[in-house]
Image 1 (cartoon, one colour):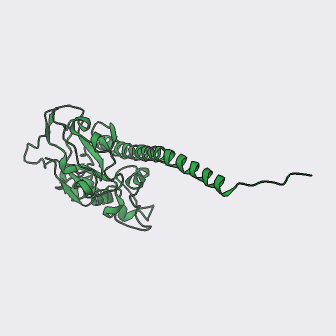
Image 2 (cartoon, rainbow, N blue to C red; image 1 turned 60 degrees about the horizontal axis):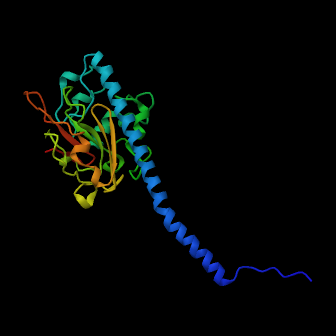
Image 3 (cartoon, rainbow, N blue to C red; image 1 turned 135 degrees about the vertical axis):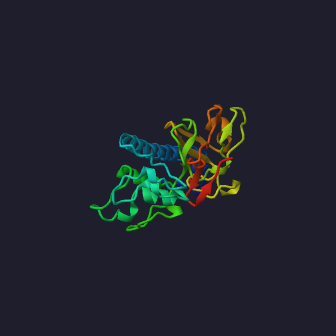
Amino acid sequence: MKAGKKGFTLVELLVVLGILGVLMSVLFPAVSTVQFKSAMTAVGVRGRTLYTAIFDANTERQKLGLGNVWPRTNPDSSGSSGGEQKDIAEIPCSNSAQYFTELFDMQNMNDTKKWEPFVSKDAFKTLYGNGVEPPKGGATQLEKDNVTWTVAANVQDELDDIIPVLLTRNMKASDLLKKYDGTKNTKVSLGTANGANFDTPFSNKGFVLVTKGGVVISGEGGRYCTYQIIYNKQAFEISDEGEDTAEFTYLAPDGQQAPQ
């Protein structure tokens, strides 16, 4: 006589489910950490790509006797290219959404024959992702929700390479500095709970920035978002001397944030 098949008892099933629950509770933080680091890496790559597009455009324009394409809060007619399209140097910008709208010539984006951005077209996708919404199809301008980056404005060639020129919008740019002695180690605020205007892409859990020298810096949590890490313990002073030199500042997606 064959023995009958025996299934799990209710107690055994509950034990197995309990073990699985414990394993999940142990593994979930590790998986979340990996996903977060992967997201930070992806944003860092996009930031570097956007920086490279701007750097390449500036190199090309310099050969032509034109000014750089970093945003300006005041127009610079001397940078005009003389074409039908108004040059980026002639367009004063008050926020990064407006700046990137002009930089990528969004007004003509839906007409491939007329579309002439000032930087590589491929860099447009670096503006959104990881909780930052892409622009709606057919949009001719960016809104504040479509832009990941706060960008430095009135950037001069003499600016130190350690100065951040692109930073994720969840950083409070007004906490950054125009003069630093290399020793102070104050934290820069992250996320709306700490006074920044945006939670995405990382809330108060991390940040990504790109320096004028093209170095990508990222860190998890507020403990690493400090002056000594951001500025690599290097002293500097940003000078705005000269009648035609507009004051160095930052343009967030929703407005200007002047450094201290």
